[in-house]
Every structure is written in C-alpha cells, then in structure tokens.
Length: 223
Image (cartoon, rainbow, N blue to C red; front, side):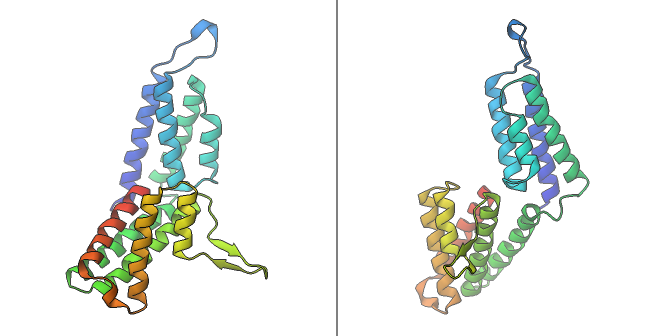
C-alpha cells in the first residue's frame, strides 16, 4: 500500500471538487458572491471527512476548515481550498509521516497480510490472535480520531485502559458505526479472546477466515 500516493490522489479529488464549486460563482442582488449549494455541501462534507480521518477532530486543519468553510459563499470555498492546499504540501513533502493516522494504515496492512499467510498454512489460532490484536489497535485509533477517551478513571483516581469490548461500545454509542457493526466486532473479539486463552475448539478455520475478511473490510471502510 502506497499511502502517500493514495492521500495525494484523494487530495486532488477534493481540490477538483473545490474548483468545480468555485466555477459556479454568482453574485445575486449585489450581495456577497455565492456558489452552488449542493456542490458546496459535497465539498465541505468530503473535506471534513478526509481531515478527520487523517488528523482527528482536534487538529488545527480540521477546526480551521470547519470554521472557515461553513456556508456556500465563494470566499468560504476558497478558504477550504487553501487549507487543503496546505495539507497537500504537508503530504507532498513528507511532513506528516509521523502522524499516527498515516502510519497505522501501513502497519495494519502488514499484520493483515501476516495473518492471511498463517491462515493459508492452517495456523488458525495464531492468525486469530493477530487479527484480533490488529482490530483492537484500530478501535483505539478510531477512538483517538473521534475524541473518545480510551482511559477510564477509577474511584481511587487511577486511570486504566478500556478493553476492546468497551471501546467497541463507546464507538457505537458515539455513532462512528451502527449496532450491526458493533455486534460483528463483538463476535470477532470473542474469537480473539478464545484464541488468546487457548480455547481453540471454540471456533474453526472457516470462522477465522470470515473474521479476517470482516476485519479487513471494517478497517478499509473506517480508515
């Protein structure tokens, strides 16, 4: 997976959306210049989704885009395009290589490939553990992106990490994905837990294959 190329391709699509929207500029009744509202809405939502997945909700780029590109005015569309051009420059020059959102995609890909190889060699138990661990790390990543704490404060003041099942509950509660996906994730985590505790008869090769396909699809849709 060439993450940089994929990100640059996605940025180009967003910039093309911006240009398409800007070309609809008109000035009704001598007021501020406006653009097509439907094209603007598509540009804004796509831009916010991209920035959220790349940087998270608390990054200045996301907040700046959200604040300065709110309404279908020509100048606000230009604001959004300008912010995306800055993001393009960061990606092009390799300045975000240390960002978790960029690195995890490469790491997840490597682990999924490892799990797939083990499964092909009939090592279903080791494969289940790797797939489950990769899934848990992705759940943590989704929590960070969506400003969901992965820590729980106890009555004694100490903080402990939420379990993968708890992260799954919080993500569904926040609306990151629906209840159907939540139940599917719960079943995958159940297989991982059985594998990790040596309860190998609780699942079979076919279920691990389904787990691999399900987790791969889930990660690709939510990265």
